[in-house]
Length: 556
Ligand SMILES: [Cu+2]
Image 1 (cartoon, rainbow, N blue to C red):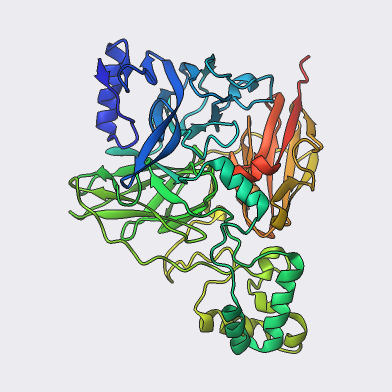
Image 2 (image 1 turned 135 degrees about the vertical axis):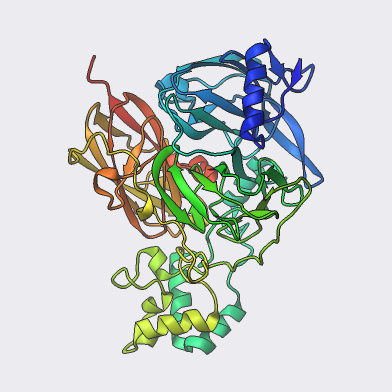
C-alpha cells in the first residue's frame, strides 16, 4: 500500500508519477488504519473527521476531509466520471460542495438546496458526476462553519485537449485563514459585538492628527459622519486573530515548491479562506495570469493581484535565478501574512518584505464619493471644507498622512502592475451574446454593528428567492451598500463579468464587489435547479447573506 501525501506541493512530474501509481495499485491511502482518503480508478473514499493540526509548531482543532488540511488535491480529467464516497465521522451533519463545477444540483452539495440533504453522522453519501470542464477549482464544506475549521481542498481538472500553457512544474497554492478559536465562538463574538476583532479602530489620537492635518471642522465632520453610520473606517475585515496558511502551512512552516532555474512554474492559486481577501505577489517575479476561476483568459502580466474568497487564478512564473522567491499574500486588513517559497533547493527562504500599511476606507467606499473620481474621504467632509479644492485636499491628505486611502489602494509601488478586473479577457468568445431579457438588482446590505448581513435587506430565511426561466438571459446588478467587499458566488452556473471586454467577458463563479460600488454580470440560466447565491465570506453567509436562485425547468 502506498502512502499518499497531499498533491498540493507535488511537482507535475511527481503528480504524474503518483497518478500512475494510483492507476496501478487498487488503493492509495493515508492515515493507515483510518482510511480517511483512498482512491481507485475514479472512485474516491473521503472521510470527514475531527482531528488536530499543527501549524508553526502549535496544535489546534480542525475538521478534515481525507485526513489533511487542506484536503487531498483531487486530480481529475475532463470528461471523466468521478465517484466520491464521503463518510461523515463527525458528531454533526456535514456536506461537501464542489465549488465551480458544473454538475447536477443534487450533487452540488449545499444542504437545503436542490434536494440535497446534509450527510448525517455515521452516514456515507455518494457523489457521482461527469466532468464537463477543466481548470483549477476547489471543494469545501457547505455546513455550519466547518470550512473555517479546515474542510477545503483543491480540484485540478486536466483538459481533454491541450493545456493552455506549457509548464515544467505545476503547484497548487491553497491560501486559507486559520483560527485556534472555535468558529462558533467567533460567530457569537461577532454577533455580540461586530467590532470585536477590529484591533485597529481609529483612536482619539487619529482624530487629533486628522484635525492637525486637515482642520478641526473637517476632522470632526468626518468623525460624525462615520459615527452616524455606526461604522468604522478601518472595517476591511471583521474577523482577525488569524494565522494565514499556504497549503496548510503557517508562515514559519514555509511551504516550499522546488524549481530548477529557467523552468516555467505554474501556480494554481486558490483563495480557500473563510474571510480573507488577499493581495498576492512574488517580489522579483512577475506573474502571467492565464486563468481566472478555472477559465482561460488571455495572458496578462502582473506584479500582484487582489482576490476574494472563493476566487482562483492560474499564473505562470519563470524564476531564472538560483535563489529563493517568496510568495506573499497579505490580507487587506494587514493583520498578518501567508508566506511560502519557491526555491531551487529545500530549506531555503527568500526575503520577507515589510508589511504594507492598512488602508483607511473613505466615504467614497460608502458610495458617497464625488463624481466617482475621488477616493478621498476629504471630499465628503462637509461644512468645514466649503469652498476648498477637494482634489488638492485629497492629494495633500494622502501624501501627508502617508497612509493608503480607499479600498482599492493596495499600496502597489509606482510602476508595478496590479491586476484589474478590466484586464481579464476570455480566451474564447462568449457563446451567448444576447442582450439580457431581465435585469435583477441585488443590493448587498448589512448592519455592521449588529452583524446582520443580507441581500436586498432580507436575511436568508426571510429572503425573496430570485426566479428565472431556463434559457433566460439575465443581468445581475450588484449594488454594494456596505463598506465591505463581498465576494458574490452563484452555484451551478458561470457568470460573465461585464468588465468592458465585449464578447470576451471573463466567466467567473465568484465576483468581488468592492465597498460602495456597483458591478454587473450576465448569465444564461442554463442549469435548472434551486441554486445557492451568496456572499462567500463565511460569517456573512452564516449571518444570512444568501438567497435562492431558482431556474425553472422549461422542459417539463
Ligand atoms: Cu459578505
